[in-house]
Image (cartoon, rainbow, N blue to C red; front, side, top):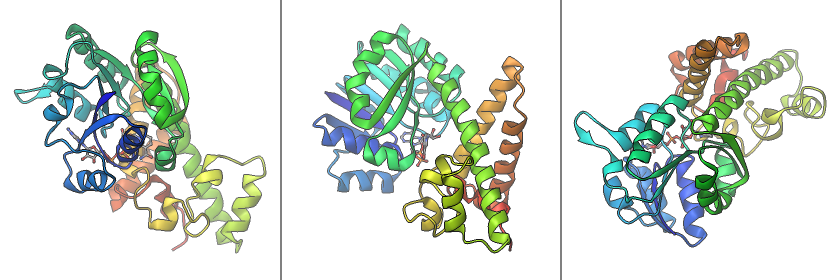
Length: 297
Ligand code: NAD
């Protein structure tokens, strides 16, 4: 299949690589030269710009930071035309970015008018899941469009859920990430408390992992440096899932909660914790660096 892949960051890079490895004709593009160079080194063909990437593409996959990037890419900005003008009628857009459900719906509506199908398909599983091809996809959109996307999603992920109509994937994703933000902050607090009492963070983490406090952070993403070799914490919090991206998701959850009058006290507190962490200059570090807020010294 001819695929255009736009956005080759921590997640999009390995996802595009997996589609290429599966034998698809991928043409990839990112605004960042280092991101393009990394994919080129993996043998993935790079297009000179997004418009060239989508020429003749049957499927366009996007993996961008936030709502404004997705809207600008497909619908245009400041008088510049959007990519929808260059995408062939009958093509399918799979947007895997985590963005506002309302933005997914807006892009889907314009796409539909142009004869292009659209699904929102945000993911969970982190960069490890993106590299291993074991992501969880949460899809919003028509069932027929999901079935067209499924063979590609299966090359990038292990779990595919149909959450509902366009935007429903995004709603599921912000519920999940609100919980993730809370549990990472809570896990950090518990480890820091144990360490302040002289406990070995590895021993304490293992005790909690096998006890009622067990969770994803303790299983796969320990926030304490040195506990888990593969976790961003042990690599100076580089790569992974940026604090500012977590802050964006917690903000989306709060906007949504306001709209539907839901009570999300811990989600609100978590958003403020990550905002303070970002203000302290840690926005580009992996979100598990939130442990710095509660560590002694
Ligand atoms: P990232 O910042 O590493 O990568 C985003 C890439 O998009 C960058 O390389 C940037 O140059 C590129 N980009 C921005 N605008 C562009 C444009 N108009 N055209 C081409 N390229 C453009 O971010 P990431 O960690 O890969 O996350 C991407 C999305 O996935 C975000 O919405 C994030 O919330 C979500 N997400 C991330 C993770 C994670 O663990 N990192 C997990 C699940 C979901």
